[in-house]
Image 1: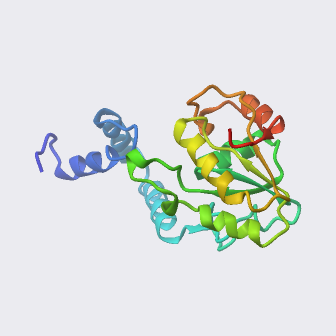
Image 2: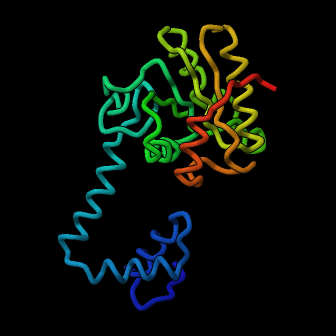
Length: 205
């Protein structure tokens, strides 16, 4: 370790915080010094919450959202519309759509989008499990709520081709209220809500 500070323990903590996305070494140092000013029981509670999260977190067997149980609270909620599935890239997108309070169906988290440049193909995503859900019956609409990027559009088209054999299922996409290349999780709630309400049929063109 190339020690920069008077304490190797301090530097180790700074190094670990600096590994977090968007956290530089200066911000990491501020966070570490803040932790040192806290009561030990608060620090213990913080570290226990992170450790428990990493060891005990589940991914819903149905939609692949983060969950405390094998099936998440959304999928197990009888008041949700089980005939509608909203397909999203990641769990942050689920949170963004839920914040709009404009959607009462279920979700399907792909875990990414098709991106050959990044080595991500259809087999690395939860696309086949989506097809299996549709194949079981009871699904009337699949909403493609992926980011309006080239990769998102390519993934939309791939899913469209996979679901073409189910003509009874309506395939829709978010209205283009969002700008091209916008990521869903960074779209404001009003725009995202309107795009969801005003969704249009997806034709594959």
